Amino acid sequence: MTKTDIADPSEFLTHFDGLDLRVFTSAQDEMPIDEIGEALVGHSTVFVGHSGVGKSTLVNALVPTAGRATGHVNQVTGRGRHTSSSTVSLRYEGTHGTGWVIDTPGVRSFGLGHVNPDNILAAFTELAVIAQDCPRGCTHLADAPDCALIEAAERGELGETGRARLDSLQRLLQTFADKAEQAPGR
Ligand SMILES: Nc1nc2c(ncn2[C@@H]2O[C@H](COP(=O)(O)OP(=O)(O)OP(=O)(O)O)[C@@H](O)[C@H]2O)c(=O)[nH]1
Ligand SMILES: [Mg+2]
Ligand SMILES: [Zn+2]
Image 1 (cartoon, rainbow, N blue to C red):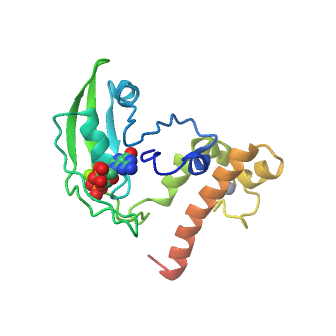
Image 2: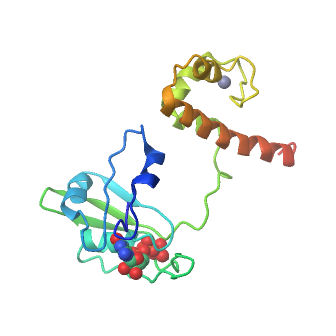
């Protein structure tokens, strides 16, 4: 999480509560380079995010020879100008070891057009296990009869995080259902 000098990240970070994630916070004059560097060792790590969030700034700090151009952020919209237009993989060489860091152009939009809806459930690993007890062809949407996920939620077995994850899964699946309705047969 970059730019924590500009705003307190705690509220935003609640979106990730309950996930097994290690979060690094980084501010303009206080980038946790050693800490992040240690986590990069032995991995290929991709820096992804909207334009202007500070990906290249962080990459330059981690790989001093990177020389990635960094851009200005529009003061009104808070958006960047898509400064990075290419994806590059750079060798990270730190005191703890080596790895690769990959700087990417800012994400312009997020879409699921290329994603097979069957793979969405698979990404929610703990819910996918429960969904093995769903009837064949279960949509897992709010109105799905005998859906094992909904039943587990109703029995209180998912916990707060699990319920939030099920909501998230259902919202994603709903976008596919809506799309299928708009374009029947496709
Ligand atoms: N205040 C503050 N500004 C930052 C921080 N990190 C980066 N910036 C500034 O944010 C602006 C955009 O940074 P970039 O590193 O170019 O952002 P980017 O994510 O690579 O942007 P794209 O290449 O367009 O996708 C620059 O002016 C940076 O100096 C930070 O932690 N705090
Ligand atoms: Mg960049
Ligand atoms: Zn189901």
